[in-house]
Each structure stands twice: as structure tokens, then as C-alpha cells.
Length: 345
Image 1 (cartoon, rainbow, N blue to C red):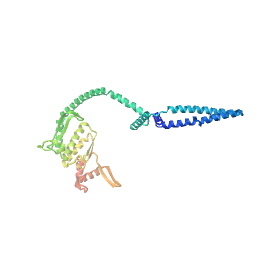
Image 2 (cartoon, one colour):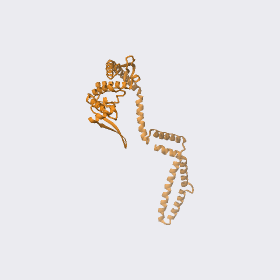
Image 3 (tube, one colour):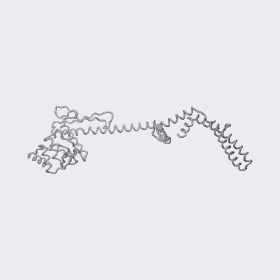
Image 4 (cartoon, helix red, strand yellow):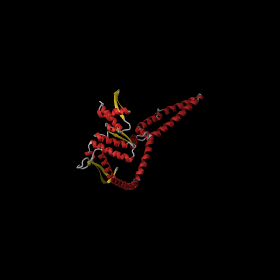
């Protein structure tokens, strides 16, 4: 690029350059120019040296200057003659430099060297693309093999699902009955498709009804909050038992339930706690009493709101469960009931 920039400078100022050299040549060579004057001085000092020998040295120095300036004038003349106005070349250089500047800015590189390095990288990519037909054929073959394997695995998964449906339906229906929905009917509906997705070739729907004469429908459309809470607990309990999950967290799984159902839900959580760590956030005393440890979460408004977690001892636990039973005004009956709940745990 420096060479092109130098050439551009030369071509843009060729007229000024030629004029300057021509005027310099004229100043050296015209009749009243420097060289003519030096020749007069040379002749005069030659004459003077005839009368004083030491002036010969001055004559020789002037003669040397005359010869040097004559050589310079000849060089200037040649350079002046070689200068040509070339508008076409000027336009070519301008376009070339404009392209280079554009590419430098586009690719965010500092100089032509980096641009050439980038060119090599892009040429390699183009070379690889030229072999794309071969690569595409190879990838298509791999895709076909993978599709065959995918279909095989999806079919096996579908068969496995269908083989366990009745067992899951029976287990969940019985569990829901135990949690106060005696006429519960849980159905798993599977519709097989031709196109596999991330979950296989099956579209699985969970259907539910709480009454004998009610046709099972999608859980989200028909189940109440309490029914969904119980259904989720039953499903998670079944999964935890089969998968040996180390920890499960339940956030207000007791929504919409109370009384005996809450106690039964607490028993299920306690049983799950035999093989998994269970963390349950609850407002129900029947469930809180089933835990091996009881933490109270509360807030303090001092310098801003802060949330605190406190592990309760036995007496504090009785007090907190009593509050759950009767509110902030704790009665003796509530305390006795709380003690019974803890003793029966």
C-alpha cells in the first residue's frame, strides 16, 4: 500500500512536478542561468591565475562546481522528460486504494499484511466449500443412518412407555384415593406420530377425573388446586422411589387441602424421607409435624427487610405448630393438639 500511495501522490501532482523541474532546469541552463555565470567566473579566474598562481585553486573549484551543476541539469532534464500525465493510471490507483481502505475497514484489520492473512483464511474456506458436494453426500448418508437409529430408539421408548402405562395409572389412582379422592381416575393417553421429536414419537397427555361419571380430561383443564397438589405429590413420590433422587423440594405442595388429607400427605412425605432428603415449605401443622427438623422462616423490618431462617427446638416447635393451628393467640387446646401431632410423628 505505501507504494500505491506514493504513486498516487506522484500522479496527482505530475503537472506541478514537471513545471518545477522545468523551471529548475531553465534556472541552470539559460543564457543568464547559474551555469553560464559560473563559466564566466571560470574564465575570469583562469585569466587571473596567469598573474597570480595561487588563484588557480579557485579556478579549479569553480570548474568543479560547473561540471557538477551541468550533471545535475542533465539529470533534471531526463526526469522532466520522463514525467507523463496519465489520467487512466491515476484513476486505477485511486480505485485500488479505495478498495483497500474499504476492505481494511470492513474486516477491521490494521494493514494490508493482516488483510492478506485474512485472504488466505477465506481462500481455505472457499477451497473447503468447493468440496461441499462430497461433504453433503457424506453428511446425508450419516443423517440417514442417524434417522434409522433415532426411529429404532424412539420405537423402543414408545413400547416401554406403553408397557408401563397401566401400572402407573393403577398406582396413581390408588394413591389419589388414599389422599381423599376415592373416585379418582388417572389416565395416560399416548398418540404416536411419524416424526420424532426430543421426547420421541409419542405425544403423551395426562387425563384426570375426580368423579365416577366424569370423563377424564386434561389435568390442567379439569383439576382443582387441591387435586393438582395431591396428584403432583403422588407423581413425585413415585419418581423419587424409582429414581433414588437424593433431594426433593416441595413448595406449598399442600395448596387446597387440610385435615385428614393433609395428615395423609404428611405421611407420604415422611415415607419419602426414608430414602431421600425432603425439603417442604408448608403452612399446614399436619405436614410440619412430620418433619425430622423444623425451620421457621420469618422477616425482620429494621434497616430494610431481612429474611431469617431458624431451626426450632422441641418447645419452639410446639409453639409454632400451635400458631399454625389457632393463630397468634395460642390456646391450651392448640398446644395440646400440637404436642399430639408431634408425638404421633
